[in-house]
Length: 446
Image (tube, rainbow, N blue to C red):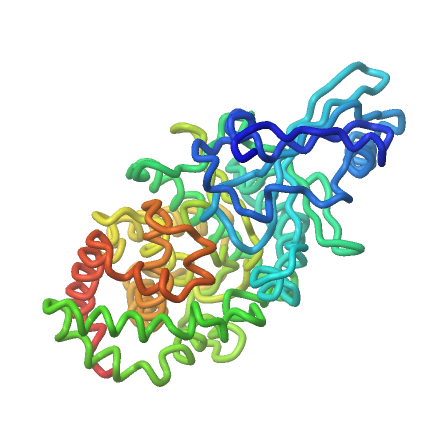
């Protein structure tokens, strides 16, 4: 029956029909912004039983402040493609409902934790992901926008969250951006002008967070859980095996063998050195450091573009207070196109700094102003984050982005991970980056 419709009501369980349209790939493609229906995450092909018209009706009655609201129909499909995310399960829903004012339709995105047994649930079940994201949407980002508005800047930093809970289950519900004209960039390079919009918005977010951290140091204190604080991540083979696979690549490609001694030398402690970078704000605060509330997972699939008008960041699950360099270094490997990456993002990061500096002045930042030279010194100081990303996450995410491998295979299959390092386009990228590392002095004093 694969590829054909399996569509049914669960009216035998609930008085209001809920249609879960999961197997008809043509229908899913029409209802989502993903053109490749083969790429849906397996755990998003069937919604949990609690996600039904009764539940959505309760949510909408509270959100619309309309006690008489009645959901007449609810369609649920997968919300995203493989590679868009891993740390949650997401569904797209369209609720048809009536109130005393008439009949309406509301497109929604529902985000929840994995319920199927397996690697994904094991890795994420004890994490702080949802508490962090709820805090970002309900506390931090609204305050950041308020400060920008007072300074005359109408930049929108987040999409409204219409419902959230941690008990009895972790759930967040948002307005769906797709009907508003926003899409995820998948099967084409991201354009320079689009990247500039991304870095402009990031700079404004970072600038306002610097102001808040300077003037209200306790306000963002709860945002302490970053990538490194996901309980099962740092012991997962995907992370611990990355450097071995990378060194195998260096041994195999003649042009890269000269770099092998550097990475063999740092292999013993590079993960701890990378951890020290990520936790510097909390555990080794530097008086000359620049610290912000960062996004933490700043890659292309965590943003949606509305043509040339706007970009909206999503997925704030590992927002945390940390060095300003974290989002910037991460973006080099996980966001930029090769022509920007091969110069370690110099032009885009300098553009970002110009917006950061301008925004700090506009919002009345009272701390010591950062300098462009100081920013690049800190990027250099945090080079172990580069070493980690290039040796571990970068080959994997590039292979997924190029549709050569699936995210689930990358995460769970060691042979798939080994394969990722040897695609020609990845080898070319790594050659360029290692040459730039050498030119910049990254290998000195290891």
